Length: 212
Image (cartoon, rainbow, N blue to C red; front, side, top):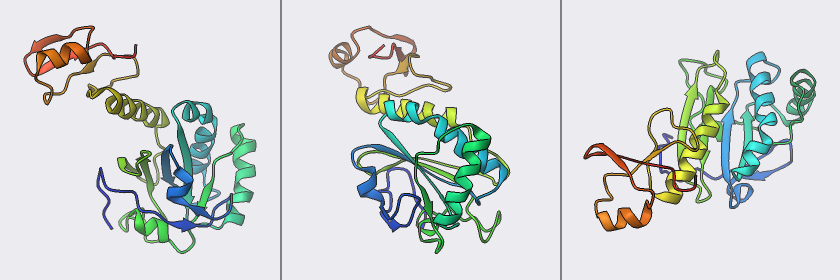
């Protein structure tokens, strides 16, 4: 199955470190970050899950839930979590899906045969409260993810949803934003963007982030 941006994230029921999870029910009214790792007791994955655990407060203030996945068992996950907590100086308090039958990996196309026939690559999905897929990133087995970028994109998605804006390259929360070309009426622009805007070109209208 090929997932695309804007698709409804496939629902599933699967075992995890906190018991059976019904995915859409577990997300509830939150955003979610679903990410796969190739295997338990591996070095890059250990650092990634440690980073995710340390970002709990950052995820919480953005109304985001994190959930990991590999094709290992819940029992194996539980043993590995102890290693993560000891070596990464953190507390892993997000669930990890035990996808032994590869049901979820198949739904989300997490196994890329030219990387490995048996384990998941480093896939990551940002899913909004309406259960729509908003971001898809796949990293190779050898490369750890940039979780600062994950937070940056969540900020961008939440700001663009709330204010009907777009964000420029390398945008960070608090930077200027862009008025989309779909908004043409100057009166509407004045109402929505009372701080005004700069337009170095007619198609490039830059305005301060509305809530900053």
